[in-house]
Image 1 (tube, chains in turn red, purple):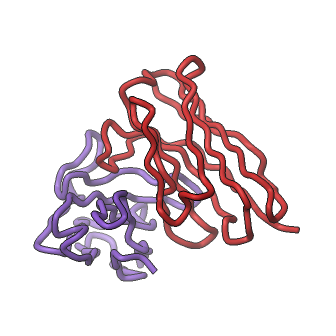
Image 2: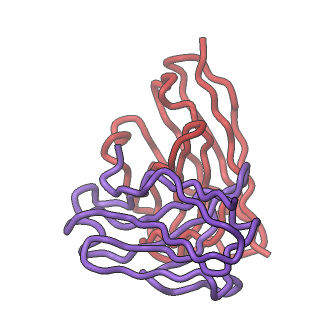
Length: 118
Length: 110
């Protein structure tokens, strides 16, 4: 049974950097696309970006200047870094897996609520 | 404001058939497949439909998807109380060079 487990700081101050990790258990890591998606409280879903099996990344243009997604294949983990956080970045952040770049995410992490407040 | 539009709410009574629409343009829905996700309160989304009308293993047959031109629809027949959730369409945006979501539809079972 594939499980994605996320962790990272849940409370940040404005201008700080978000750092989240997503570990994959019970399944293969290679050969999949790994995506980060976020959801502000009470609002809809937003694609942040993804990393493909070759390590190539693709980011939402609205976040591209602040975001980095990386993968550690030795640990079966992916990471999200988002710089210069503001209150508008307050959201639940999810990691998710897809077979291709077809936005068919079959496994999701549990979600991490990240709040940006002074 | 998403480039893909869904009605904010929908409702139906148990046993009824309801449809949720997803409207876009030639640069997203019109040229790419549509997926549908169900999000129960406090949980991560779950894929219901992929490739416009394909159901993953385990998704009941009463969930179906269709697409015509730049619009797609999710139909739920034999509505049940446990279907009360938020529903999101997702597709590829050629202009974004990435996936986009509709704004989401909250389904209420009366």
